[in-house]
Image 1 (cartoon, one colour):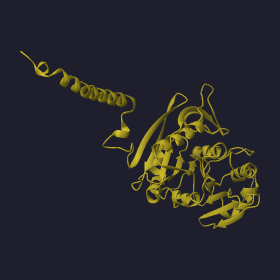
Image 2 (cartoon, rainbow, N blue to C red; image 1 turned 135 degrees about the horizontal axis):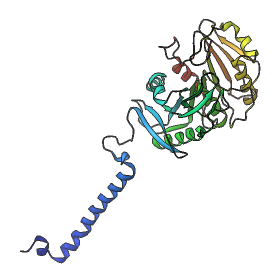
Image 3 (cartoon, rainbow, N blue to C red; image 1 turned 60 degrees about the vertical axis):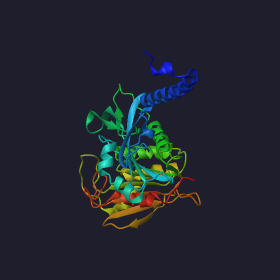
Image 4 (cartoon, rainbow, N blue to C red; image 1 turned 180 degrees about the vertical axis):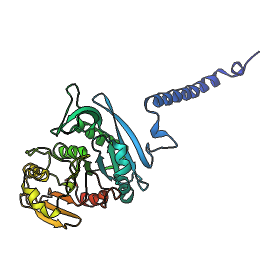
Length: 337
């Protein structure tokens, strides 16, 4: 019995073949793309490759998978270049912790900015209080702790640099308005970034952690910085007597106190005047601002001393202060040149 193909003229068959070959080719291409990337960019459910709210992304850096979270506000459309704020967690934390409780996703929604929460890696470390333990840490050396002998510390400067590059590929990022905030060990990492990545961040805020040694570093760019500390902060898990905010002059001139060491390092590294101006009040927070010695420069350093604050990033629940919107109001006035 003849089939339909046998009844068709040769010319009709030849005309049909390219059409079928084209369809087969399209299917093969789609399968290849799906296997390679998941066709996320062409997903009809999520054509932009991101969700409003929380997103988790991974990168392979130094042969190690690394993660970071991005909060995309409801008002984000991608039509205009958007500011970005990084928030770095402290010891034993991760990016999801900071997404949950730092208060920055709320600022992101209110201000229509992208907020980013990278995670550090877990290491065996030896610190001056707890001795040897396994925990998450940013590679923020020099610090008051060290890696165990057999550990291979990863390059977190490289990781954060690659996160910025990855963000620029996914979102419409305003490269002149990328900012960095960090808490505790994340504050130490933020201080390190203010030297080694100051050409990528417009301004930085370190909280409850900063430079560990009184030294002089050479930043890629002299940028505006803030160091915030509570007057009851004796490190994670530690307590002590509250230091009166009225003693700010004493703690900024005595190198036995951490604020004096941090101020000295900023003065030496960023070309600042040792003479500061005090604002604020002793009932809430007092601020010492060290101006730049370069005329017309905006790379001032601020030390913010907060009353009643222990070792935490204040979010309105763990302390009366809600730090994220206050820090954003300061950060947003600066841009990369």
